[in-house]
Image (cartoon, each protein chain N blue to C red):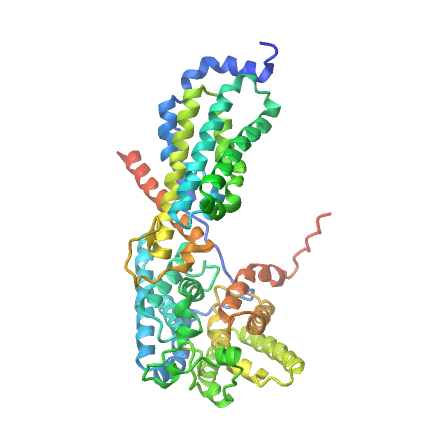
Length: 337
Length: 224
């Protein structure tokens, strides 16, 4: 008898109620708006960024992107199989994670960095929470944070440099690091077009803008998030300009330099790990931008997009709690005395 | 009899049920895997996370816990009939603190560098819940032999858990095992494994693996 009860309870436990991650109402149904469509939109939006990366870094970019893409797909297949879930490679989410992860790594990084980062991203960043839609943190950034701390030598400023390289961009330090270490300012045009060194995807501001605007126009990414990031960076960068008027690194450099635009448009806009309500999204963007500026100006790291996004991911449930509007007619809960 | 108090009297009444309590051998075996203090009871996680960066410090910690747990359990078992129920936790803590102080001073005298490396984690054995749990569950209820066997079994289980985590962390983090290089020179050290996040990752994944193996085994038992 007790055994039967036990199995009953076990059965009940295994059939879990779906954790609903619905956006704030109205829920207009649109059958074409599927995960797969969104992911394909992101893939299309990534074309200019990937193109620029391959143009500047040549086979460095091709190698790094292929490693991350293949390892992410393999990791997804393996871990989903281990969990006994349905096959999910066709929704392209693992491919997106792989490409964004690859774009966030330095070109000269050794092969095992992309490989390990991919498995951490998919395994610890996503599948362990229950797969796509359940993860708390942006998977690509979890993978990158892991290798960043594990292999500090290959991922820090020196990891971007290879003086022997035949690719021009790789022989120079990244703009943010040049400024932090030597105080040298990179010309705005180089930052805008993207002829500098850096993580594969971050170099070209114009490519990120084009792809990012496409995402926002298609409503695949919410415009509130990049807008919030840009507002926060502009305000804090403006204040820093006023405080140190002699500095050659102006607010425009802050916006076009580093991974800011790439992070604002492609990484922070991940719908799973960002808030649901529009106002919440804007707050999320503001917070991300503010932390990026704090890290850039006051921390030892030249760049802070990754940590800013991870930090705000952790705050997302709280922002949701504050900003999801009360349904019409709902009674306001009395504050407990 | 009256002086021993109601709690002790209860214990004597329950003495008839002694047959149901685990024998010393069962206590010993249970501590190692079936009731592993770390993987099964999730006790004493502070040293599990803090001192498993390398095998040497992990094994020193395991040795210290073995000594403290064995002595404390035996002493508690010997005085179990004169324990007052409302004072027992205080008595446990004082007993444990005595032996922890001995270990702490011993390490400081003979293994100075290790004592430095382990820092506050040796004094913190006083509040290690494995020990107070074993004193409560076994030491204060069973005879000296059961208490001693229980202490050794639990300590071995604890050592096993520490060793499993420390081995993964030290090999991945530094390419070494007990300070001896086991991987090639150009092994890229996974620095994160030697840092606190590595402890959480390793412990979580090993705990998951432990539960996974266990679920497979219990499934087999259930159907077969």
